[in-house]
Image (cartoon, rainbow, N blue to C red; front, side, top):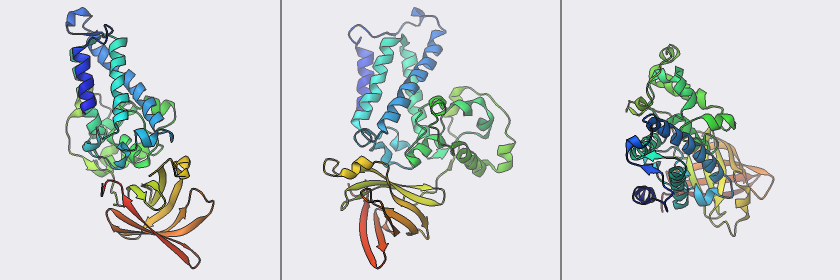
Length: 328
């Protein structure tokens, strides 16, 4: 937040070496340019964010730029600006580029910053609050929703857009279960018959920010989250995929010493199913340096401690993982 505030202060109080095109007199440009510039800023920033966001998910950059933000696998509004300093600088830099490329009235800047903040809070809400008419409106086809971005945090892949679905759909990176998941959530909120009877409606974009009663769309187990294996040196994201839990290697405690970091996104836990709140059974354990898999069981000792038992024949090994953030 300090970085974003500093960037806004510099933009407002500095002419960026004479290149800034921020203006304060609304008569300097045609009045239609005020709303047009807001839309153009959103389109430019969404494009910049999509490609920056997608690049930060590359295994070469993820740990150093984006891992902090993805410690929230089922985010809350507190995750809105919970990210690495490097990521904050790269996002704030886009603002300066816009101020140089195009004239921006101070009111347009203020509106865009406020809208971006509100949209980020909504995207990380952990609840879907859209009214039932939204599903059949043209807005659903173009705008990111809370379900859309929550799937990104939950799956660690796809759904990279900030405001719009354009780039995800063009580049085929939108999660294939997004629409199905959204419909399931809305049916849970409104009932299947009411959702199916929704009529097409068109409302101003500002109505999207009206606070409405929502319904949480993930019933998460404490198993989901980011874990560290102090013995093996790995950092693993455990997420739910249908009825099963999967665990994906997303980093190493010491990348300079640990070769496993080269196998980012390798699944070390596969197809574990919940037996009760604490025990998960009958999945497979894998090691990034070996080709074979072994039978395994998982047990939550508590919300921040995971006991992993792997067995080959009569031989058994136990590891204890700690949830990142629980004791830091």
